[in-house]
Amino acid sequence: MSNKKIGEVILEVKNISLAFGGVKALTDISFDVREHEIRSIIGPNGAGKSSMLNCINGVYHPTQGQISFKGQTFKHMNSRQVAEMGVARTFQNLALFKGMSVLDNIMTGRNLHMKSNLLLQALRWGPAEREEIAQREKVERIIDFLEIQAYRKTPVGRLPYGLQKRVDLGRALAMEPKVLLLDEPMAGMNVEEKQDMCRFILDVNDEFGTTIVLIEHDMGVVMDISDRVVVLDYGKKIGDGAPDEVRRNEDVIRAYLGTSH
Image 1 (cartoon, rainbow, N blue to C red):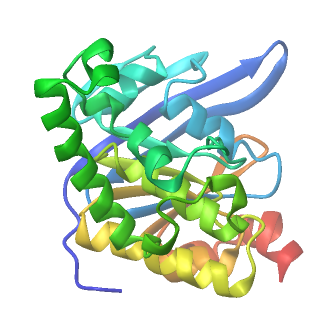
Image 2: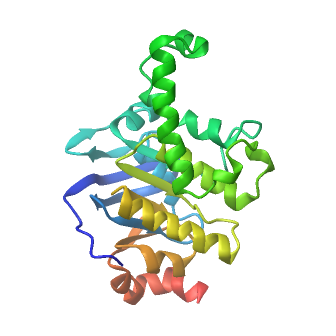
Image 3: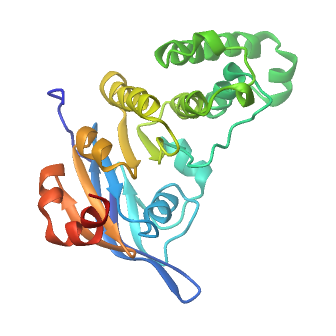
């Protein structure tokens, strides 16, 4: 790990509970995320990890509890508001536009930053054209950063899975998030693709200073790249701390490590 400086708390989850009908998905969960850290959420299948991410980015509204971002507390926010506050997300099952090029897919992440109206954008007229050129430059930098220059004009649907995941990451980065939520970014990847993705996650954290909240099944990966880890099991928090602490936690070993190692 680099000698990075972890900052103040940027995101705080307080006593979050979530129920669907009578089924409790999350029960009284609290943890915080500090600026510039890689904070992982782990746990067996059905532990409530994706539900937690959905609460943070406004897809689900918790039954109880609240979430604060940069000191502002909110009970209910929609995904658009969360995005405007600087939280971006990648998805477990890719939500890319398969027929569009890599460049155009990543450009969609810039929509939040586009000031000119849609008609001017469509006509590419005057200020809208200048703005698009400026936005495109930012997107080109992301494409270089993710080493996908060779595929700029390729329709995303034609790319191998590992590269599609990289485009998904690029689109989230194009939003210039303060906090990036990664939902199983390495699911379905081979060893080499995982290593690449790990490197990019560390670089995003390091070079852009982006705070990262990561859900991941691969324990090796999590223990290698995380600053702190929170562990869920059946919707409850059973562990929280540095990777080494979590590794030694009896409850975690019982729930998780015992089954996977």
